[in-house]
Length: 254
Ligand code: DAK
Image (tube, rainbow, N blue to C red):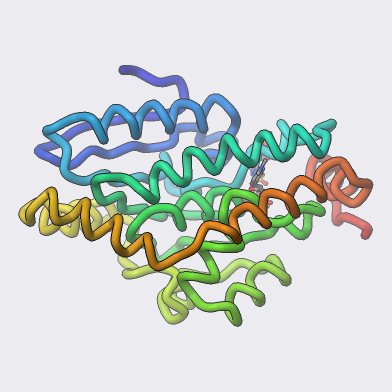
């Protein structure tokens, strides 16, 4: 299948999915989210594929977040609907029958970092910057970030990253366990594929079983709380101010 906003490729038994909206720093608009769901379905059902690399096209961004330009005018109900649709994709990746490695080649912000968090393993390039800046826009991470970041780095670092909205550089991300490895930009895809080559040599049924078992460590209730809280941020005046400030390229006044 061919896509508007994705480039996909299968080499040996590894598939690569690259988000291809370079001018918008690969921001996730609705079309891209839908296409990602289709592309992941395709590779999960393809018997040739034993592992997937997810990355962003270009050198600047993995994904700079959800597409802020699609935000304005949304109501609480629409916010909750969007949240459920996003959760469907992110849960699909997390619960995949095959390993998914995020190759973080630049900015991974907001929904972009949440996408990387839904993957099983993260490898970053030395220039990557990661953060959940949603509170600057008057919202909270709404694609599972409050849950998955806390699970990965612990509550202390999750509180710091989410409440300040500040970005962390690749080396810091490595120290706190946000990413598994940091390599140069040139080595990034090779490193991701080498890791998946090792996994691909193991029993596919055992790999799927391991993914299911590891995911079972974490409960589901927090995701529902996140959806409710995200919905309640949508449509209020602080959210309008946060989004308008971004679009007008100024600092928000809360
Ligand atoms: N959305 C749309 N366009 C974006 C974008 C984004 N997230 N990020 C960047 N762009 C666009 C810029 O508007 C600019 O477009 P033009 O002005 O050229 O038309 C182009 O990409 C290049 O960006 P900059 O000119 O800003 O590039 P700089 O190098 O100066 O800065 C930057 C790079 C990454 C620091 C900056 O672009 C930036 O701060 N971007 C926004 C980052 C951000 O706040 N991301 C988080 C968004 S909030 C939901 C669940 C979750 C979410 C949403 C809904 N539901 C449950 C419903 C997720 C929310 C988020 O992700």
